[in-house]
Length: 276
Image (tube, rainbow, N blue to C red):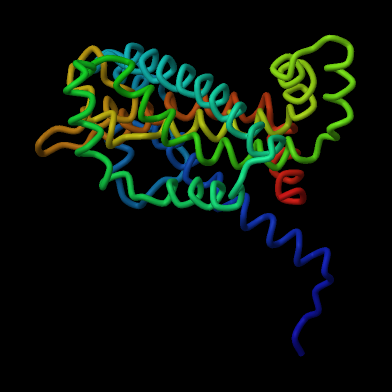
């Protein structure tokens, strides 16, 4: 006789599988970063490190300028996120509030523009940056990342801006605000969950991006973290404990960001889904 499961148990089981799928890789990388090379290749496999060590983290910073890569990634991701939010806020407000012709066509074009594979855009982006003399600069990454983030940021903000009553803006403008002032003083604060959601998505996309960072910034001093981590492997060696330590360093900023803003992000995703 098959055992019976209540709907609550099934939901908990499904949630547990999702959590396990999301956290297990990061947990495995963390445990690997605490092992020695000898313990990592020993048999039978040990899941928990017998003698945890932080030497791999020391070695990760000693073998490569990991701190420089970290600062480069933070600079590029933060600037690209801020610019993306500023531009997408104007675009989303125009779509949500102004009487634009072919509004649905504009939204369709925004969605379509986000579907191009990045590899197909690599050559034109590279040639544009080279013509502008921007290769091996922060701007070479900030501009493409901003453009790539605009569709998703705009779509997220449109759904939130549409949910805010126009009467609030009208009241602010009667009190002396311009339309621009009403946007920044009324609409954006009320759409804070959507702004945080769009910001997190933009930051993660810029933080994780590899192809453009590898192609546009070949200078050692301008490498970002994803590119720098690939330099730890040798021609015949793969120092997995050291690579794992570098990966944990790359994961920490995202984990901290999500931990701080998790309520706003979850609320923004949920409300955005309901309103969209």
